Image (cartoon, rainbow over all chains, first blue to last red; front, top):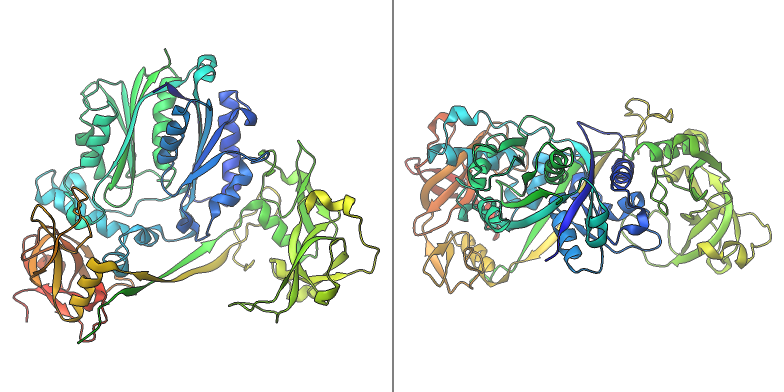
Length: 310
Length: 163
Length: 159
């Protein structure tokens, strides 16, 4: 394993944007590249994150490459999920040792459709999707299970309001090897891991986030005495499960992205890591834990541990 | 005795309200006025059309200030003859579908060419035949098709970079 | 593109265009031996689960044990009634939902099963819905081998 660090991060989130994906992305990618002081040709690997169902346009990630300037041809990959998983892929790619900088970006314009309904398409296609349960309904099952199990009270959970899904884009530059040595204000990824629970919602224990807990353990982030932690999830009640699963100490300043703020689906998890990075880059923290989630009822979770560049 | 169930239908039906973005909105709105606009990259000077708000080669943002009007005449740089009927097809095969490099643009536009299929060729000079102004919508259907102009063919050297 | 539904003007002086767009896919999925058996059973008003090597019964069935990934070993018949493990209320059903009036979604632990089936419960009022209550299947008269052969579940006391 070699050290891989976050050199820069930029994002833009809107309630609703009239810009298309290329227009949103070119802005954040340009800012992230400039902040990293790397040029287009320094980037050895690019990984993007998006979900075609958000705008209903097949292969929208291909046309989004217009924002990158993919000429001469670049080494590029894509995940159909939150940008934090694109970060994971880029981190793995940088472990190969032959490439020293990677660009990670995520974009989503959920304002074009009814995301609460669109999310049915990510469910099991045989037993769940034909019934078209909405995202809020599945969240309601989890919240009810938590109340019945005594994890929290009905008052603590509040009402299951549809998240304010928004549009947005985010970009991050990762560096390793000689480019890391040259970097300043970078945050080294000390550990990163993601775990998924059973696909069938009826086979899961909805009253805890076992995948968050395991990912945190594997990333070396569990019970860690870090300065800050940033977690994200669309529904406010999910903060309770995430706080428990991350097992942070009282000293850690905890930020939860989601609940009442605009939740940029696909971008939120990468934003969470970007927020944690910003705390370190600005000198407000020496160590941080970041969390990202994907799928219904916190089905899969990613945790990474960041530390200030030595 | 029933036979075993081996397959299921899994239809997806989702409504969207899509927006094409700002640059493409400008392009599509100009089509209604009978104009084709592209964006010039401030770094490589190439004119991109349809515009997306970024230069796909350089990866930098373009700007409404960089809008340029492009000619509605150009050169067929590549073409294919569509012989196969498919769902949603509006023209009876065979017909010519071409990659057309408009004069003043650096990215070819894909559109139909109204020409007997045995007369289609690379280098052929063509011009847009616009739908009547009252029938134009903000869509590439504002141009019905391209028709040969009768000018001498462009030399291969002139367009080989785009073929 | 329908230019008539315009929003505010953008910096280039042109209104961003907006258009209605309907995405439709007509997918057909092959089912395989485990899910195929489950759907074949539904047509006969029978619910089959799958037994894992450790003896747990998975309903709805998967080809593998969700905990270990091991292949399941046999089909097992379970009951068409069971216990509500958790639920959420749908006050305003969509046209694509199984019932046209307000209903509950629930995870139902069928008798003989070790995991829960997700389906609708037709119960009339939200106040009547309770975790732990017993429900039983209401079958569709015409069954073709899909999860919607089960129209919904109803309280067991309800006839």
